[in-house]
Length: 449
Ligand SMILES: C[S@@+](CC[C@H](N)C(=O)[O-])C[C@H]1O[C@@H](n2cnc3c(N)ncnc32)[C@H](O)[C@@H]1O
Ligand code: SF4
Image 1 (spheres, rainbow, N blue to C red):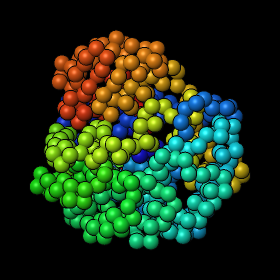
Image 2: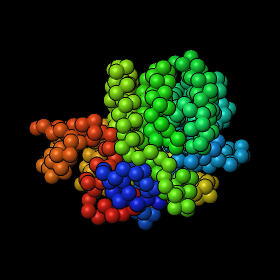
Image 3: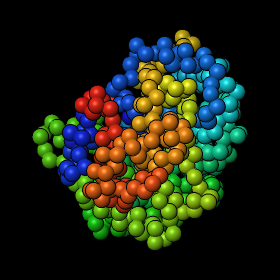
Image 4: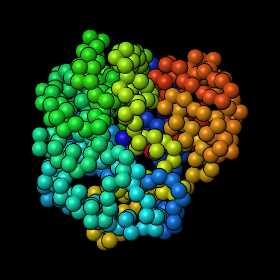
């Protein structure tokens, strides 16, 4: 869930305050701070200089963006391409390999092994087994992830084949994330998904046989056409599959989705369930998973066995690790500098064909902004420990944000004790709506991306 650039957003508080109930166009996930709209091309020298410096001792991760999909889902806000032919895909894969070669030579790598690797999209599983093996072979000429504790690979069920699943396992994937979203074919079709439920069940047999350490299932609460009965069925079917991890998003309507454009053009009402209903669906699902023995891992994710499964990418990223971003429009962070790659095809391919890193824009957060970033991201986990922030930033977050904690405690969204903030279930279910209160004043009224 890293590439979120191609849409223009208004501040969430304007469209989706914690109280508003309609799912209006303009809502969004908060995944970084300061807002992406503040990252600028004129700050590029900051990331260019960071690439030249020896790094600190923070963990390093690698993100590879594969921007292709079979179809554009009507709710999707990611930067994706649906009409590229085999030659264009090869051009992209070649550019990505060139980019890896260039970044692997930067002093900022500092000889650090990758702690985690994430193939995200778009749909990485869009690539054929041959394209995947060839990509990984070429990447291995410059880097390896033998020491990585986690290699995630995002999949759309209808793109999988038995041989592709086996190839993924052989290439070292440890965490396979499957975008099921819903089990009802009419709902999948209405929402523009390229797969149907039979493809999920077919793929699941291959996935189980390949024995990945961690398989995650994505669901969305609030797809167009959703009902209580169908949602209960989704939860039951997911429980039957018994994945190690389940992630449930509440449907957002950023400006650039097909649904959002339709609503704005026709001044129509949104057909997505309201926030109260979506939260009730998620709450119901979390209760069912808890009853089956799952534990809460964040506001979106539950896991079957915390002693066996973690989510290295998320946990390291939320704690400020370095993330080497590769691929078109990817977002990264290196030695204290946020950056994003060039977002347009010709820019990205063009830069690499000239042997240049495809850096697009950057931003160096102040110490206070780095603290806010970690505070809001770690709050999505469901709790904050004051001690952690005191040690890392020298700030007492309980005192610094005392009024906000008190306000949210009065609303029933959190509990506070001497050194810890803990979200209640109600707080966890609306956590994205609670976060803009921590933004600095100058970033409250600005676009997010
Ligand atoms: C990059 S996709 C996962 C891989 C693959 N492209 C797929 O869709 O199967 C990441 C996830 O974002 C979620 N997502 C996309 N658009 C969303 C929206 N508007 N609201 C909530 N979740 C969304 C979906 O659950 C999706 O599985
Ligand atoms: S398959 Fe995934 S990335 Fe592609 S359009 Fe659908 S939700 Fe977006």
